[in-house]
Image 1 (cartoon, one colour):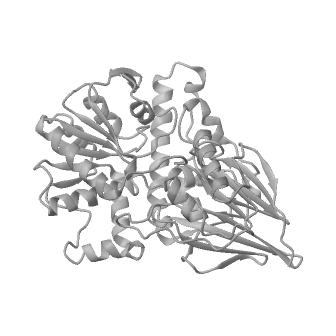
Image 2 (cartoon, one colour; image 1 turned 45 degrees about the vertical axis):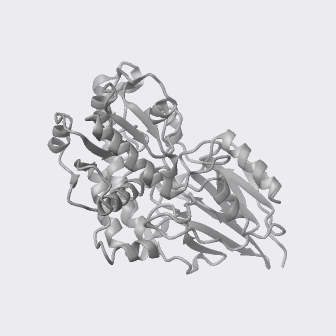
Image 3 (cartoon, helix red, strand yellow; image 1 turned 180 degrees about the vertical axis):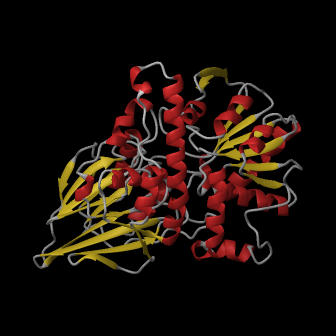
Length: 468
């Protein structure tokens, strides 16, 4: 078995790993690279001709893991995309939204761009490509092995990251021997609201492991809720707005649920809250359709509050005109809007109207890749660009990584620690910046797992079959 690392290699975006065995070729994830426009060529390159790819094993619906599927289909892929039911439902909305954003971005570049390449800008794919690739999806149940090919078995287990997310185990049997490859996908956290805790993987020979928060420890969830209440209260007291760039999937629903709890506890100031994202509205409906993914805590909570994603002062906004009206309103409020890295979408308009107001607060609640507006705000830059215009950052910027859906270093070590170190030959660290990978690698060595590496883009590794 040959493994090629193509995306999320020494970076935190664009997950794509290719496996080749016999005459077969499959992908683990097929994600969009998000970040600097200068790197957009990465989204137009595949490690192999898409027409020769037999299947994609999709871990979850986040665009940096699924966002190149329509491009793959556009260039000839006609295989199967294996994913959970919830992931399929989320992708139907998220990929359509991605196609719409790309169309608008290309249109804007052609109209306003000054460089020659802007004048010929084209989206990676369109709505028809999304429809085409969605027909390739086949549903997978957690804990039920599937056999896409006679020589290959795959099993999905709940990763606890977002709705429908999975860690994947692939077992290849040939010539009387076998080889088992584990893939964490994006690993979630224990004791989080809404979703179940990550399920352990079976013992494996090789592991592809995410490393987003190597060397980092998140604050406890209860403390994060206290801080959320504090930030909202302080901002409302000075007459300001709380603006939250949040991923439409997972992060928005968790924050809304935390706000629902604060309302029930009588601890949220009497200000209106708006979820301003058509995608987030659709995604929240998908959440409502998949209670099989909920953890026992949420199911118990719903016995007293059957609507964990809604309360009297919360409004979900779809229409553009309703979104625009928010920026003409001066009363204290809270606005949650996509995208989480502040790279596109309505959040840019809200930031444009809030960043220069010292009464307002921008609340960053997750990882932002280098080159994004979100990363600039997290790093404390005093001036940023939005739609080509400069804005001084006078608003307060609060960073709460505790709302991240990614495991921190202790949680990653606990997950890997469930695997037999005598069988596990090597751990490949992906989906992490080099500094984070180095720190996690040293921690793995100290924990008794010395065989690790952080492959760069294009690196190829031969995986050896274990003799019977």
